[in-house]
Amino acid sequence: MTTPGSIRTEAHDHIFKIVIDNPAKKNAFSPAMMEQLSDALTELHNNDACWVGVICAEGKDFTAGLDMPKFFGPTAEKRNIKEGNVDAFGLSKRCRKPIVTAVQGIVFTIGIELMLAGDIVVAADDSRFCQMEAKRGIAPLGGAHFRFLSRTGWGNAMYHLFLCDEFTAQRAREIGLVQEVVPAGQQVARAMELAAAIARNAPLGIQATKEAAAKYIDGGEAAAIAFIPSIRERVLNSADAREGIQSFIERRAAVFQGR
Image (cartoon, rainbow, N blue to C red; front, side, top):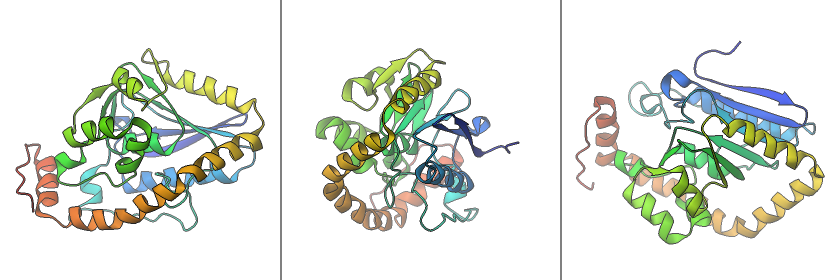
């Protein structure tokens, strides 16, 4: 039995299904959930019986992002990602198996970054996307600052990263952020269908294809990943970051000063 706010997994033949299970809080992530997601992705990475991963979520929403007070401020909880684990955002260690992500409803901040760390995205037609970190006085730190660009092109990436606007599944499909849009409620079944189709191919051939494709972009990604600590230090230590988090907690508009 799972507890509220957890990541659970299911094995379906060679498909490893990873489920975000915190619908009461719009599937917002706690530090413990980030640890569990890393553990699940590591199981997918290491288990030779698992050929394809599917990431999905319970309830109406994929995820509203981080449960901010649990990550920042006086009530912050510690994270303990195991050494050698797959990084949920594919920054320090990327999963070598193909991953299909199914999203619905709210897909904010790290929701987009989790999609971008995978390979193929199926979106319900009620999906709402937003990379809103700059509205909270910070910046994307889970890979959106370069993967959004590589998936959608400079203009589309900067349009949404700068505006921090909300956009539809149709728009996400148009710019290449998602590959299929299906009626709400059908996204997980469709992702499982795609995973089953992938699993009918030679697993080593598929894994080699992913590895080879990743080699093509590793040089550019390495530089972008190496820059994340500088971004993190600059934005998380700013007055704007403190104001952004406080405004989130107080449910009011933030007033930024650019410092």
